[in-house]
Image (cartoon, rainbow over all chains, first blue to last red; front, top):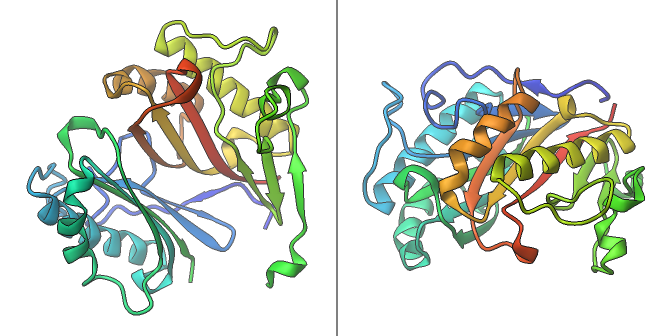
Length: 131
Length: 136
């Protein structure tokens, strides 16, 4: 397991525009896939989506699913999620959407309020098992 | 692979000046190695020569911090090329573009997974960075 990190090329839907240009959407390191903090984009165009917290959450998690699958993983294999919200008052709106994405039992998760770049309302990162 | 077969050890920077958790008597260590992974504590813009915090322009703070991360990784047998996940926390979200300008010098190709945001930081730091890396 002593190789350098392997950046998983995820050229397909979900990746484009979801992260800063100098972040890889997904990186494989040993047994895990590390996914960057994602913001909401239209998966077809990579254009930023600025919408309600619920709709941004929906977009991000749909794209996260695609990114994980492109990296040989899946939502079922996620072990830890970190959700950053522009306001903790929005946590219930995020949760309502979030609850539909992960099978029981869902992964470990932390949610916190933070200042986010470019007016985004939600940012989500995760760590998953590679297979 | 069970966890009880993974050895866990503390990692420390070769330069003791950068061992803030020890010098400031904080209840954490600079980093932990478990198996082939390194988990680094959040690092800030500490001057590696004096141990003082450098709170100059954000570009300088980011450069100092990333050099400290690099030193820490290399002290533990890893390198920036082996970082898989990185968190960049800014005190001021308006510093994002300037942080990025310096950041990309350190990760020019196939950069790690990254999350960058802003929240309150201690000690007046403009930036703190933590990461997970593989060991060589």
